[in-house]
Image 1: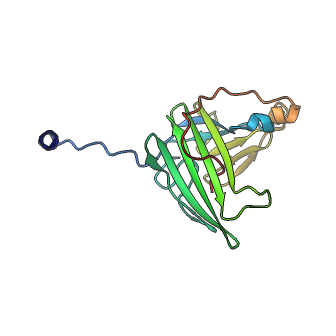
Image 2: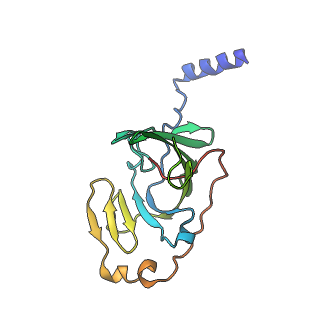
Image 3: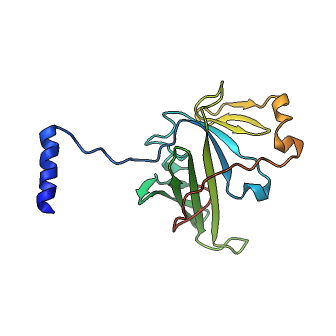
Length: 205
């Protein structure tokens, strides 16, 4: 084994090649993504659509999460853990400490899923110590004409650009056709969820 390892290193040095670095963070395929809560059907919530650009997911911001201090929260970056990506957070709510752990799985080319669990230092009013949630997403294709990277489309409301904070209201004609406005149930998208991960679900903090 040692001889084989030395031979591999020697071959790399001789050819001038360097091993490809491992991915530093999850990166979604550019284009339009449909994102919804895993239990959105039971809640009657329509999915949102998010336009991802080539630079949307970077070392400073990925999967809509910006690592670092955010108010009373410290958000960790996603790091590789086997086939998954894991990010942790710690927040202060008064005198209590709330920790979060998000696990992202999928190929990020056609689909992905984020399971999150938020743990409270002391049970809340509901008597529950943990809050869990899952978000699933699928790639729809290229972003629509007129969309910019960072555009988050909320059916029946409008488009919020997550990069610059600008908001564009949805035209009345389009709003009238949305499931939320007509009272019709939202079409259930086909999402291939990733294999179960032996760790969490819930809202990222």
